[in-house]
Image (cartoon, rainbow, N blue to C red; front, side):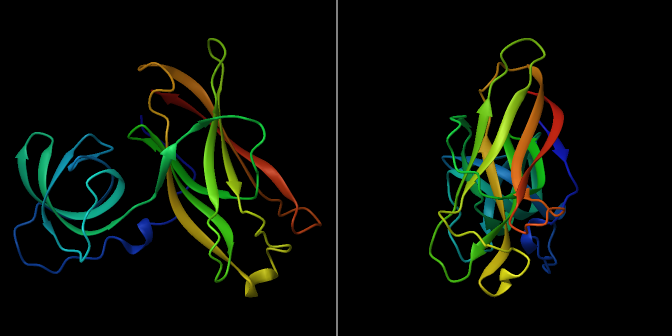
Length: 226
C-alpha cells in the first residue's frame, strides 16, 4: 500500500550525502525505507537490497525498520540488487494500537505522511525541552470500520510526560522544535485487497487562537488499499 499526503518536507535529514567514489555504480544515493528480517533487507517497493559494502562506521541492524542511503552497485536478478550503504537511520517503529479513548493527546504535528511497506510512515514535529532526558511517547491508534464503506480512523497520540511549552512562540529558550520519523505498522488490520476510506487525526497548536497554548484537531482523508 502506498499513498502520500501533504507536501514532502525534508529529505531524510541529510542521509544521502553525495558519493565521490569513481567506481561502477548503477545509481547513486538511493534513499529508501527498509524492513529488515534476519539480515534480509526489503524496500517498501518490494526490492531486496543485498548489502555487500558498509561505508558507515556502525553495524547495520539485521532486523527492524531502517532508512537506508545507498549506492546501487549491481543487479543480481529481477528485484534484487547489490548495494553499498553510505548512511542509515532507525526511525521509531511500532505497531498501531487499538483506540482506548484514554491516551494522552499532547500536541504533535504531522508534517508529512504516507503509506508503504505495511506502515503509516510519518515525519513528525514536536517541542522538546532542552537538555531533558525525558523520552516522549508516540502511538498511532486505530478504530476499525464497522461496516461496508465505513471509515478506518487513525489518531496520532503524543505523551510529552508533562514537558509542554506554555507558550510555544516565546519559550524558545527552554524548548526546541524537532522533527523525527516514525513508522506505525498497519499490515494485517484488514483483509488483503480491502479498500477503505481513512481519516487521520492529530492535535496541534491553533494559530488563530488568542491563547498561544490552545490546540485544535487537524485531519486528513484519503483512500487506502491493503
